[in-house]
Image (tube, rainbow, N blue to C red; front, side, top):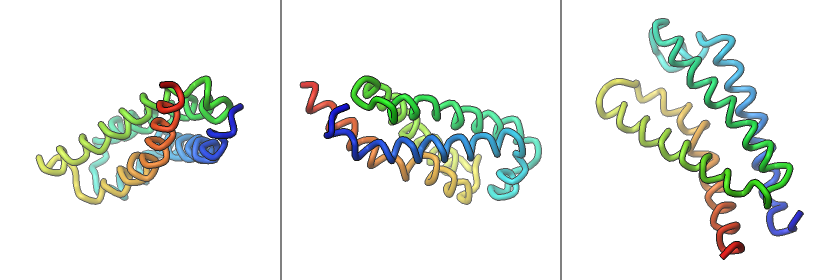
Length: 129
């Protein structure tokens, strides 16, 4: 493995742990998420769907953590998910479909990872050019 990507591996391992924990908890017990975001119990299937998507990303992060050079293109899928998560949250808040409090989850699921993932993508892209 190239030393130039070694510093990103802890980010991917942390993303694995976070995504598995958060995703599994929302799938198995969506009420904590609904309570925190002040959403009605009718939103449980939506919450569980979000939990499933968050959990599935853990496998991609696992591949990136094991071999960042080989699986580097996968980071663009992660970045697209992060960007669309932020855009979706903002548009739903503006439309009045989600409470502002939902933003804590958007921050943790999307925004906190974005800088490190983008830096990895750009560094890999420069090395591949």
